[in-house]
Length: 507
Image (cartoon, rainbow, N blue to C red; front, side, top):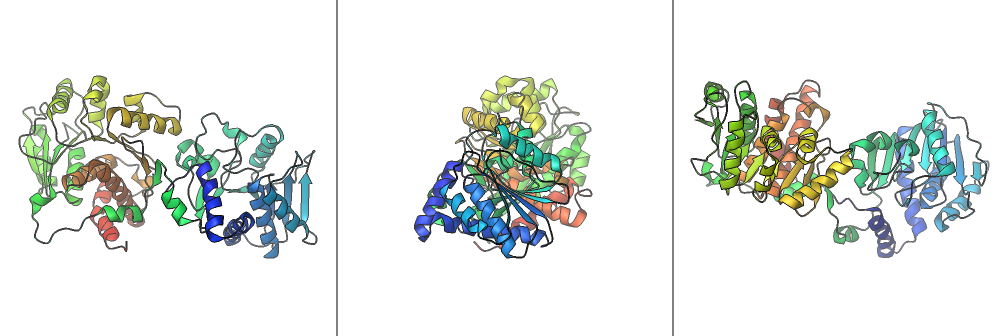
């Protein structure tokens, strides 16, 4: 699913009206109907609802919603239209005219003084002050209205985006001056701002409402931001040849584990095998041989000359991918071994965990990363690699810059994990849950991504497939174990089932 910016969304609205031979008011009515149906599904007709509308088309949406709710039997609807400059958009004015024809409607047009109504936690506020077309932060009275709503404790439903929040970038926006929504209802496509952690308490739950915007226009509109869904993932998958053998699905060389950290190697190796890799070899300190051969008998073990850690990362056989990092530690000899590997290998690489921490100890190694290397940092690892970031928005911007500069693929792990390609394109993940915030989940992801590369998928596609199925398997595990009870092993155990479900789904 595409994530379009505010300007492109406005063009999409215009294209929809042209393609479907409707006017903008009809499209506004369509949006209002979808919004009102969502509100009706959540609140009874006896619910007090206070609608706050601005002078633009977002306000027009809100006025139309108020009218539709009243027509559906909601008798406690109060409407405040802010028209402080005496100038409404054409569509907002048309919706105002329709609303005031309703007998007994509780409608106030605010031109100067605003006498705020009493609000408490039992009330619902429909926020239609400003949408994603806002050009500057809320000022003066509008800022005061936002603060009043936030302090009321009412349940807030925002149309499009919470008023005061820009649809994309909000580095210079004060959160206290933005309406804090409990539910944000966006039309058709998500906004980029929805994917930044610092906006979560402003946006609340967000839901997309289908209002049949023109699909051809969406298809032809370019964007660097996408949300991965099953329909995007299914075409990437290839069925297996009935006459194939294990070597047709590639060999993973996994540099993982050290004294006390062999579990990380076990998790990554199991995940690689359960994700379809034909062969998996674990290279680790010799102390891990009994653990690995017992816990993962399907994997081969290659002992390092050192007992407690890895000191040599030279491949001794042919492999399709080398994954480095889970549990390897950051001993000087391990850092040296990684440097030697980066200088000499032409094999695709997946780097995670301590491989990234080794690079932090020796930052010049970044410039040695082969093209299309996949790195999978969590927030802390990313900031140690590329500098402290004040927000998720700044972190994504820096990740885009780093992916371009080093010609690598960055899997920036989080609630909506972002796969950042060297081209600058960003793919956000739609699967996963908080139960995956558990020890070893990252090691599993390393194995999954490596397995897809081993099977011949391009690194950028392997990263997307790995992240999506890792999250989907986590969702399956949570459904059975609960978010509190699931472990990393529960995730890897369900990778195959996740792939099977998507493979069997219709294109």
